Length: 210
Image (cartoon, rainbow, N blue to C red; front, side):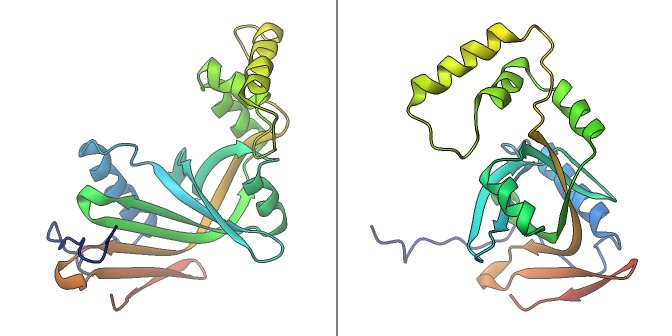
């Protein structure tokens, strides 16, 4: 398979300093709104990159479940690989890629757990099957086979009624951003890259070479 000749030129839009919002969170919310309006497939899906105690990075797709001035919220099993890595190294990075819009957003910062009340509130709004799955799956652990997992699902379905409580090892995190990069594809790989860096309570804006 030869991939060297596969390429496309980006011509959808441009990104200028005069057009970007001074608040990167509002800029992100605007771009996410455009992605939702364009009916892209799960535009709230994001790559979450973490690192373990030995410096080994890992990445996976998770779903953004809230964004405001306090940061980007997502939920998971605290005993998962990502949870264990965040327990020893609380810095992480997010990446959103919206191919039809020829856009990327990179976010970097420190991650902290959300409050138990916030985790409870989100868990209560999940479909019941997802709630049962959170009890049944020891996320990232080695399991014997699919049948073992399905039996645990059956067991927890019998144990819990219509209302399923949140497992104690399941909940949310919030990445508090310190750096944003907004990337807009342009012709001849001369992409627009605008970076916000946090300086105290303010944000500085710079352009990077593509």
